[in-house]
Amino acid sequence: LEERGDDAGALREFRVVLAAAPADAEWQNTVAYTAAQAGVELELAESLARSAYASEPKSGAIADTLGFVLCRRGQFEEGRELLWRGLE
Image (cartoon, rainbow, N blue to C red; front, side, top):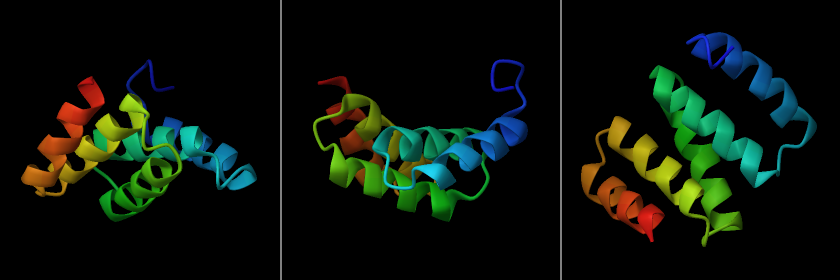
């Protein structure tokens, strides 16, 4: 679904998986990124991305997602820092 540009459909399916494993940082990250990419549920996306980042602070992919979500929410300074951290 995501590959076909159906972010809303992908987000619905990803949330089903996340419901089965709510503490899984990778699925939190996936749902957060997909929501941010679609520009929906940004408050939830930030919460999930922060939770994932707290669990996996050394993950560049998760730092990148959190930075992206924060930028989408207008928090550019913190978002930019995390985007840079994601490149390390």
